[in-house]
Image 1 (cartoon, rainbow, N blue to C red):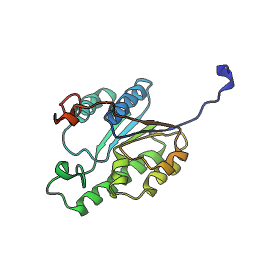
Image 2: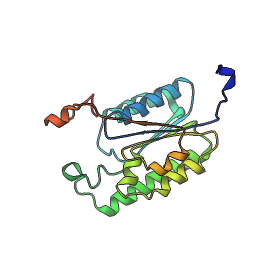
Image 3: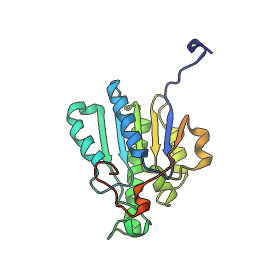
Image 4: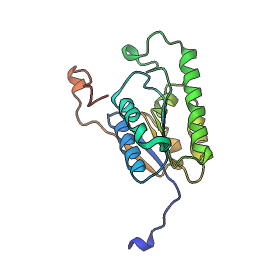
Amino acid sequence: MAFEDFETKDSVVVVYTGESKGKTSASVGLMARALGTDWKVAYIQFIKHWNVGEHDFIRKIQDVFGDKLYFYKGGKGFYNAGDISAKDVSDKEHHEAAEETLKVALDCATSGDYDLVICDEMSNAVHDGLLPESAIKALLTKRDKKTSVCITGRNFPEKMLKHVDIATNMTKIKHHYDDKFLANKGIDY
């Protein structure tokens, strides 16, 4: 087939999921590509409440991109994740934060103001029961027809794949965490 045999889409839905690292990193790369092509991007964070490298990076480049880049850090940290769960945060606070973050994401995706809306860790929020699965469906079906959406996080619901154009499953081959080494700043977060 030649390129002229292919069509283009006004927007796409991208999913980065799986048990391995790299989902957020891939979404930051997607954000860089979109901003590099003069797109307007909203980066919405559903889980990571603590300070991580990508948050510092986004804050630093916001001055460069001005109103082309909107960043919202929602969520209250890991939920129902054993030793790494957010401390001193009630179930109610986790749910309220997830719902508020979803509202921000829906507003951005349906407004027509953004070319790309990235919802980092949204799959985790759904899988952990902070949001219903219907939240993903609403985001993907109600978005402005010219707004692309990217959702990251473990356990993306398989039945939602019919609403997705590109899905990548990050598969771990090896990670030093399995050998009892903690995550490295600048590499893992």
